[in-house]
Structures are given as C-alpha cells and as structure tokens.
Length: 293
Image (cartoon, rainbow, N blue to C red; front, side):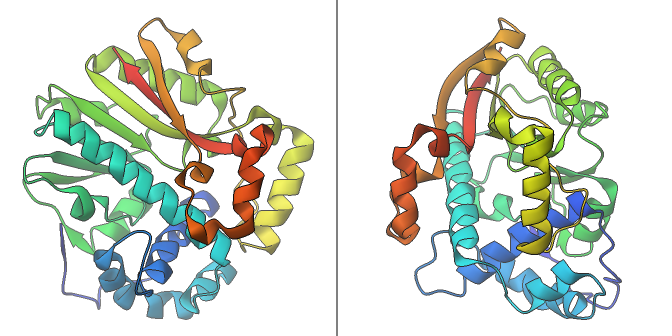
C-alpha cells in the first residue's frame, strides 16, 4: 500500500457518527507514533496524518477539530494501540501457518494494517462503508495484493470479491465494529462467513451484554459525546455474555481463545492494570478468536 501524492482532491471528511469513530482510532495510532518508544509502530499513519490534519482542523465537527490538535486521553491511546498490535499479531501468526492466505480487515477505517503485516504473499482486503473507502482511495493505492472494498459488511456481495481470489485460508479481523451493529445482523454475517469460507478464522472485538441495556446505552452515549466528542448515534447495540457464546450459533464455530488488553501487562497501563484482576472489568470489552469451518 502506497500513499497517493495529490492532496488537493481530498475534499471534506463527511462521515456519519459511526464512520467518524475510525478517525479517533487512527489518531490514537498517530499520537503513539510521535513517541520514541511506540507500542505500535505505524509510520504510514504519520504520513497520512500530514495530509488530513489540516482538513480536520478546518472542520465544523467537534471530534475532527479535537483530533487535529491531538487532544485524546492517554489511556485511550494506550488501549487502542495495544488492541491494534494484538490484531497484527493474530494476523502474523495466521500468516506463519498460511503464508498466501487472504485477510479481510472489516471496518478498516483509515488503518494501515497491510503495511504493518505484509509478508510479500498475503492478499489483503480493506472493507468499509462507501464514504470511508472513497476517502481512503484518495490516500492510498491498491495493488495486485491490496484491495479496497466499498460495501456494508452486511451486503454479502463483498464475499464474492474475496472468493474470486481463490483463497484456501481466510482470516477475518473485526476490530471495533460488532458492538455498533444490531444483533441479528452480526449473527447472520458470522453464519454466512462460516458457510462460504470453510477454512477460515475470525478475530473480533465484543462487549459484555450488560453494556447494551437501555440504561447502559445512555451512560455510554454521555461518555462518548462529552469525553470523546463522538456523535449521538455512536451507541453499543450488540453484546455477548461470554467468549464462547457464538459457538452456540452453529456446530462449525469453535472458540479458540480470547484476549483482554489487560493481558498485555504493559507498564503504560499503570494503575489501570489493577482493574484487570476483576473478571467483570476484564471482560467488559475484549477480543475473541474463533475457527469457522
């Protein structure tokens, strides 16, 4: 993946509330890579930020203007970058077993994961909503092994493009997506991926079901709007009771492992690491790894 050189055609960044969350994730990577010892090494993010930060600074949106000034809580930067590093590690382990596999980065945003994990053989698909992909195409170029797919993940026609590459093994990375989706949509998507890709794995972030109750939604909405300056439609809708829950959806779904960012034991977690000793806190928002077969 290489950056384009024409910065005059970027235009405005006009994302929905949910789409805009990808900017917050991206700028966590940017801020982290301004350190001398970043948790996540992501030089491509710095190059892209040079192009889009002036657009954000001139935006009427609170979140975009805030990101342009680098105003993000350090705890969130640490959390986001530990998560991204872990998903990169999942990809590298999968590619060590299947070097010419396909990886589908669902809800990719402006993430530059392909640059970080490319082994010279992987076929990599960045998938996001049309508005996001349209903007990303102004920033990066596709190659014979790197593809941008503009589609709702729930419009299953995107699977045909992946299948056209004849991959024997596929890894689906779903980072920071499912919690914003309706439960029936998530279930139908996972079952369709399991049906169409019989030698695949999925790594997905989930939240505990208690955080999608009406009362909890109001608390989260207040936090997102005041602390993170996100839009009112950025609500959690899908949750699970535990990491094995999706196994009950179909015999072909097998729980492999799960990860909480507390598991990293990173010194920059500071006092937050103590919260990881509580099971309820440890599994508030975490990652689960499944085999789909």
